[in-house]
Length: 253
Image (cartoon, rainbow, N blue to C red; front, side):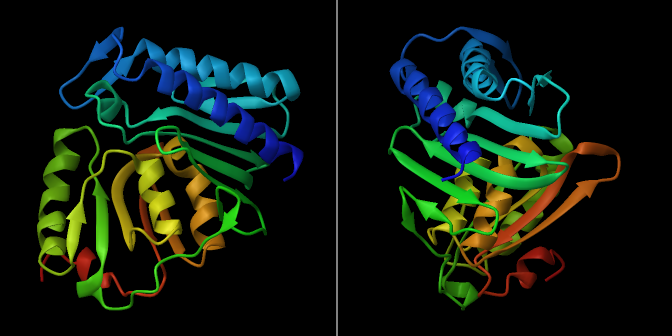
């Protein structure tokens, strides 16, 4: 692994240890929203990751939900310390830490770490997609009716209302639909063939940046479209690259 990926893996695994140690323990809630929760542990894990990165790369910048921290150099780290906060708060062991790094806008490396299953997905630009150090590939399934698809739903009433018809349409066409609660793990699961596609119409870059490298390196495809009214929000379709999921996107059918 190159130096940047080594740093990303170390930071993610340190964060994972902290999250695992505090899982199903009393938690301090910063904010409780209708469809989201903010934890003090989110902030503490973010600081741990930032300190790990900036200790090794003090001139680099950190970009995440809390804004930008660090230097103004050409390297920027894109961090989500706890993707799946609601799962975590309710004691559901399905969440992840995800970190990517880019230089002048080009992604160089990424890691997604599931501390409860001790699974770590890594990728470097131009390199292989790895799960715990072993090469992996996207699903070989080609028939839509055999596929399992996950759809993420954002935290506003409008995005929920818009997603439900698409979810119902897809449910009629595929083997199973899922809403798992962690975009980072959804896209990692597409990369290793557990899911055939992941769709979300409003997602932040820090949730999926590592996956933007991971899925194509594993043989899949990613379509990412920025929102015209919000540069920090995106629509994403990540697929294994073999099954045609176009019918899932047409809610008229």
